[in-house]
Image (cartoon, rainbow, N blue to C red):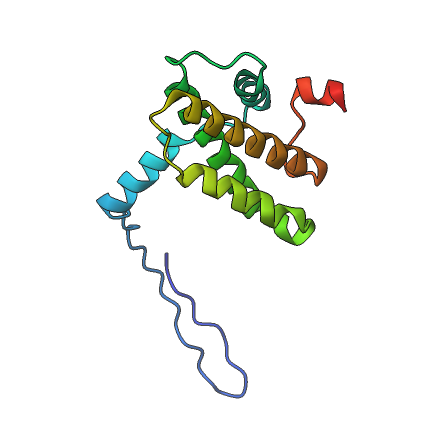
Length: 154
């Protein structure tokens, strides 16, 4: 591209414009790896699957001992996703109940699964309630769409 000298006013000369194209630098390898890891770890919000897991732990029949660890991991993932949604949408500014529910969810995320079966089931049920309460609030304030099975109840 060529630079054009424009006529000046009152004898002034305009600075010449030059166009130089430098190739864009790719992000550092570490940044690319971090972004790729985040994309691979991302899971879409699946409200019905979330409610299925909550139903499994809050049912009158306790989950089998073999399923306790798996359900704990899935509920932990649901809680992490809901807390992320709540903080992204600044739910605590929209509803004061969000502060307590986010705090409760974070405590459940950080707590380790007890080795004793009865205590593990109790922990799962607390996690299930934390998921359910946070989900209800996020639906109520419009941060997430109500799952099909929840909208039938509402």
